[in-house]
Image 1 (cartoon, helix red, strand yellow):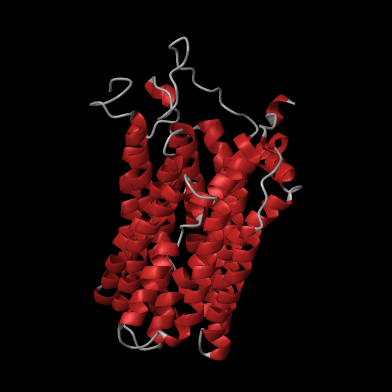
Image 2 (tube, rainbow, N blue to C red):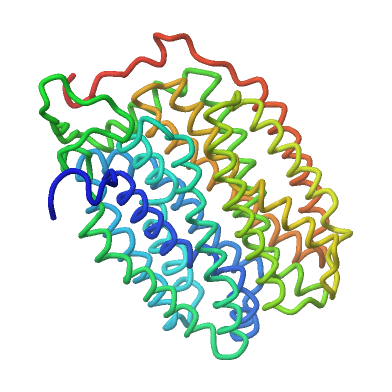
Length: 431
């Protein structure tokens, strides 16, 4: 493969395309628990609380792996980390078909897939956007973030149909195969740095001497992630981002992503139909996230976050009265609005991390993203317990709506750090 541009196209475009496909491949299992929850409950007699715990372990590891994955990508390269992550996703999903005991489910759903998906997740998208793009960075971040939504769009109806007409085990094997199919693309096309292709980042000026130098590998990955956390934790901006993104996770992956299909099933709506509605969320998530990336390049990110969370809270407040055994215009309107808002929060959050913490912004976002998944895990478990104890999800919907309004207020008050705080911090390996 020749170096530099291919057919007049900057290599960054190809790298972003492969990154999008990789994120799509990992999205299948994140969509699976909501589809597989009812079949597992019926076959093994496990409660929704127990199944929610398995999902919760997945979400926690998904989040806590992220900041270390960002540092590992700096040390070992994007290609190696993402390839290993996809293999872990495939292993966890494939081994699920042999599950007979509760701890096995937690190991497969929680540990293996949690580590795999956490190693690429949105930190992977942020790293690609940071390394390969100077111009259109917010838009690229929006497109890559939409990769997960596209995966949900593709996989949810397929998994639901396979589960209803075939078996949940076959659905798990489909996810494993999809993750493995992406690995060759990653190994061949996903270059670590623009210098690997003899170019500068998209939109960056050419080097003065004409030579593009490859950055040296960063050592002390885990130590660096912890040091960045210690630095960021002294600033209120960091904790404001943590609080808002934890609520974001609670009201997306934790609540709607995990419990929407079971909740619709409780109201008499078929699983395949409910999965179709959740897939519609994925369709409009693509539009909303790309649009949010475009707006992030032009509008104050704090204002965007406040608006996004406020709209989400209104939607959740209305949801208990919208669920029924039939599809009607109001529930379609809900999934459209919720889809536009689903992860539209990501581009402005990444931008705020970069503005506040400079070169350490990706790793800081890794920690902020960890809070997203911890919030999702807590909401997943809490909603399962609420459903088992009260027989309905109503309290969970209303509680989440209240949290969204808190997130809107917190986001609007985020302050930029002084310039010296956003300056690059020394590499811990060199001090």
